[in-house]
Every structure is written in C-alpha cells, then in structure tokens.
Image 1 (spheres, helix red, strand yellow):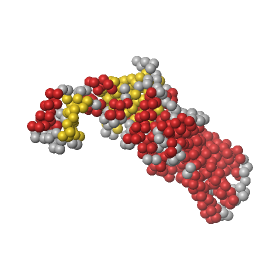
Image 2 (cartoon, one colour):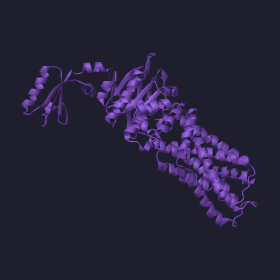
Image 3 (cartoon, chains in turn red, yellow):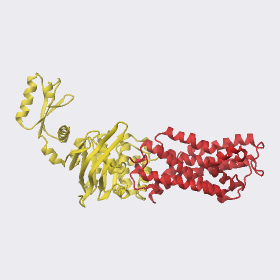
Image 4 (cartoon, each protein chain N blue to C red):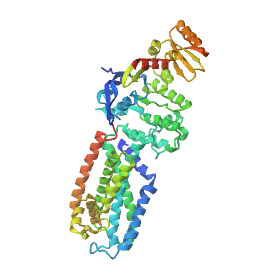
Length: 251
Length: 305
C-alpha cells in the first residue's frame, strides 16, 4: 500500500464509522424534500414537456446531496484535525501535496457518491425515472464530487474554527446549491435571474447530471462539462498550491 | 561541517515570530551537532525555544534562516527523506478520536508506506504497556495511556533518529520507568535520541551530552559528566521553619522549607551554618550532597541572565 492510500482509507473509515450522521442523515433530509416538494408541486409545475416534476426533482436532489456531502467530508475532517491537533500525525510523514490532495478529495468523492446513491435509492420510487446517458450521469457525479471535495479541502485549510467553516457552508455552498436549479428549471426564471444563474458553477453540474437522465437540459452538456472541468482544474491547482506551501498547517 | 556520523546538525538556526505585539526572536543562532548513537538532552526553561527548534527539525515550522540536516539531508529541501528517518513524539497530547490504538498505529505505518508490520506494532504495544489497550478507542484512554500511544506512533517506521519533546510531562512514575527502559534499549541498539525534558534527574541519568537553551541561545553544550564536574562541587541542604534573612536568602535556593547553598569547601559550609545560627534560626536535617544537574542548570541559567 502506498502512503496516500493509507490516508485515503483513513479518511473513508472516518466517515464510515459515523455513517448514521454522514450518510443516513442527509439521505433522510433529501427524502423529506421529496415528500414535501413532490407532494405540493407535482402537477402544478411543468419543467420539460415529457418529464413530471417529481421525476425532475430526483436527479436534482441526488446531485445536491452529493455535492454538499463531498464538501462536508473534506472540510470537516481538515478543520477537526487542525483543531484537535492530530493533523501533526500526517504532517510528520513523508506524504507530499499530491498524496494529501488525492486522499482527501477521493474520500470526499466516495462520501458524495455514497450519499447520492442513497438518495437515489429512496427517491426513485416516487416517479418513473429514465436513464438516457449513464456516462454523463457518472461524469458529472464524479466531477461534481471532486470539485466540492477540493473546495472543502481549501475551506478546511483556510478555516481556523468551526464557525468559520459553517459560514463558508451556510453562506456560500448551501445558497449556491439551492439556487442552481435543483427545484426548478432556470428557464422558469425572469431573464435577469436566468443570467445570474448562468454565473453559478453549481448550475452546470446539476444541469449536466440531469441531462444524463432525461436527455434534455437547460444548456448543452458539453458546455457544462467544459465549465465544470475548467473550474475543477483551477480549484485543484489552488488546493495543491496551498498544500505545497503548507498554508496554515506549517508555520 | 557535519561529519558522516552526524545524526542531526543545527547550523545557525534563527526563528523570529512576528505577531500583533511585534517581533519575537525565539531562536538566535543555534548551532550544534548530535552524533549518531548519542542520547542527547536539550534543556531550558519554558519559552527557551526547545519546542520551536524541534518543530523546525520536524518540518512543522520554517526557520527564518539557517539550516538543519538529519544524517546529512536538509530538512527543508529533502523533507520527505528526512521524515522517513525521523520519529517525533510531539509535546501536545493529541489523538484521533475516531480510531482504536491498533488502527492508529496501522494508519501511521501506512502513511510511511509500510504494511504487514503487526509483529513490530505488537512489540511496541508490549514494551509500552499498551498490549491490553490495543482495541480500545483512543477516547477511552487515560492521559498517560494516550502519551504512550504518541510514542508508539512515532516509532512505527523504526526511525534511526528519535525526537521526544517532553514525553514525561504530567506522566506517572511507572510510565516514566517503562518509557525510559524502552528508549534506552532503542538507543543501545543504535537509535539516536534527542530528548527535551523538565525533569533534570531524567536527563542526568539518560543523556550523555546536553545542550541548554535560554532565550533562544545555546548557553551550555557539553557532556553530562563535564557539566557536573564544572559545577560547584557540593550543596549544603537543610530544612528551616522560619524565613532566612534577605542577605542569606539571596545566595540560597529556597523551595518551601528546603534551603540549599552551593559550596566548594568546608569553610564555606561552616560560614553558612554560622550565619544561620547567628540569625537565631534552627537548621534541621542538615546534609551535604554532590551537585546534580539541577544545580548546574540553575548556575548556567543564572549566569546567562
């Protein structure tokens, strides 16, 4: 086993040991959204001609949960290790920036995919769901989880305290996921807000992911792939740079 | 110039912290070498810079200037190789609350790319008195037990150079004995040991050579026996129920009821006792003992201020 694999396995085991909190709880939350919004809005809103609102909602909820939990995994692990001081065990090893990055981000991807699969499993019964392009589903799930896992790592390095971390989550990550078209198609918005939504990177992740299920989307999946892929390369470069200089972890 | 046999070489290490209250020079031109196989003591009062020096050695802090080499490898430019040969026991009592003792040790081995070393991990657990705690969660352990795990974690990769930063702070006698027996064994087997401690009798018993730091500077660097030889040879020690007159108190070391005077010859001892009697005080349990490392330490620290 290589060093980074040990760290990756440690990070996976960390959330797996408290899976009631890290997997079951977000799945339940998504189920509640489905029960309430699905019940209230089914038949009142038409998003795409051929797709019921409940069916439209399923991939959105899956992706939202996947993104939020990928972020939560790397960020909370990093902040917790910094605050408890046990990050020193990793700092004293020969593991380099690439190993840290791979371990933290891949563990976040695993958590994101586990939660996303759980949400899919409990919500898919509410509406007949089609799968037109499984490859697009997989590509956007992996890329979205990696993107948010990387953002979580950056936030975790930056934050000195839990409240700074939760500000990052509450004032940035949660609003951006909610306003990305989980519950609606941005075409239902006034033109101004449509334009604003186009500036939200989360919109492209969810839109591309949804395209895999229905074969229809607000923008081309290739455009979404280019934008999300480009954004991932940028944040990954930033995370690697911060790890290389030991930002807030080596004095 | 560091020789081939040098385990750790500190070369003009400076560290200045700049904070809201201005700049603070924690290390000021620290230079000395530790040879392979030595049991080396780094002593000094709180705030002298011991932990700062060790943090730079461990790659947790960057020096402001200067260089540290471990077995000829630069800790800054060859950090990965250095960490492979360095085992550091941090001073802070830290642990990962998610895992058991054995899991913590297996992960720590894994970070060094080592798997299937359960025989060595079992030996570590055994020698540190942790065998029956192997499957306990870290949270369930007492402070002393957590401290033992810290030591074990530092040794998973059998590092040739072992650094212990106050490993016995707040630890009971039994663990101190267990720990020192084990570390002394590793030292006999060829591991170099660098130790910081506040327990001077431990340093005197274990270390062949000692450096003393004060305000970030090396103020003494010698073999333990030379340091003891150069100190005032004897100490007059007695107990007293009342306060010493100020002119006598200035020359003495007073710890509660215990009064100690450094003395080189019989005349000095007689003079001190006469002065006590003239002050109308009664000295009890009078004894004369050889100076120990604590006396040397206080001499050196007093002279350096």
